[in-house]
Image 1 (cartoon, helix red, strand yellow):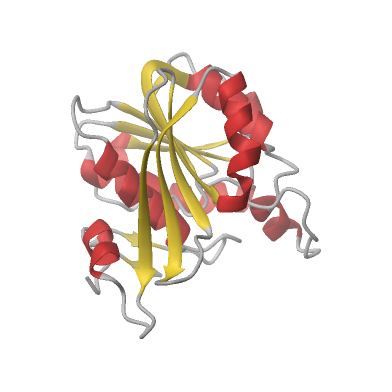
Image 2 (image 1 turned 180 degrees about the vertical axis):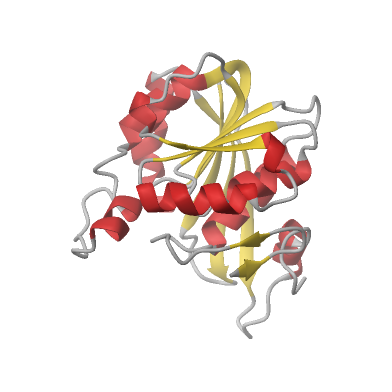
Length: 235
């Protein structure tokens, strides 16, 4: 069990456990969503459901749908969402993105998608499904966002920084543009390894920032604590 300040996440059935990437994506997205309160969220590849739960914690009138192609991940997310304080506003759905055809669009689409495009696989089918993009390519992901995002909506993604040059042209070809990006550095002084991206239909200046997780001493930075303080017990 992974305990947060306002909810608890079981992760025994899920190949992808609670991790820094997902939590940081959810926390960063919340900081970007000032203004009119979004009412419909979609979490693609929800895994344990942690990002969906973070959205429910922060947006008290929003309904959040959380989809996953993997049956075990779906069952895990379903249990976590139903056991949360916001069960009436959360729904886990067992489906691949490519087959998901809701009757409505979403104000916010958020995803911590499979990372690896052409990397060696482990042989563990559940882990490979969660980590490798064979079942959900970046082209599939962008096509799904294009189909499901409302005209004034925003999409939030976290990907390896070296894959930005792969994903951004696909987004642009679909009419979506990166309007904010945070490059994430694991340790102060090291090169960034992750990119948090905000996509919108309307092209505008790309607001760029850097988030550093740890100091060389191993202590978490004040910046990282500030971004995630509403979730982690230790902050």
